[in-house]
Length: 268
Image (tube, rainbow, N blue to C red; front, side, top):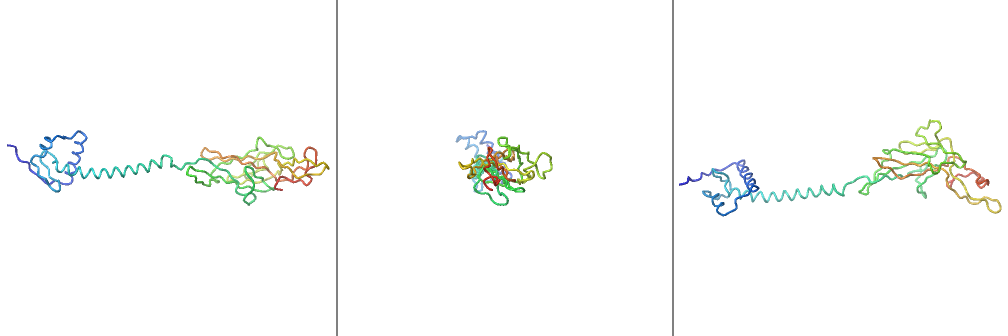
């Protein structure tokens, strides 16, 4: 005759071991037939707490009780984890805030906000200034001022490199302008453009005289300018073009004195 099982009250640690054993059994293939379950439960009595075990292992009452409790909690945990993963995936896919481009603007011309110009801005007067502004544009549609973080590149526009008197424009210089053979335009690492010596005018009045030989209303175009771009994190902005009006303009065009007062450009 088989010896009766001896029941003991196990600690939380023992119960934990029982629960782990049940998980292992689940993954390895639990015994599911009625006969096997009856055999496993022989000699065991139900307990409200499900803490009873026999010498040959965890009792099914304890196992089932804890498994049902754990299954509910695992579902809750998995649901919470799924929500957290969804949030992180949304942040990582399509919701990131990356820099898309750099917009180069003119913030001030001689201390005043410009109006009525786009793409080109005249550097007016000897000692006149233009303050540039660089804005980083992000995928979130937000912008950030990076004026003091970008690298400035200023060159003579290769397509318009002459002043109103037919002279080739000098290369620009970085502040302070002290290098021989450079000048007219000085720029700093904060985006301040300054008109320096030698002063010049790159605006030309091309309006012909009227039939009586009198000057007509000016028709301006610029024959030279300086091209400015900025770069940051491998990106380069669109160019801004800067004609110069730091001296009087040419009074003659095509052999005619059509600008007798020596105006320089439409802002004069």
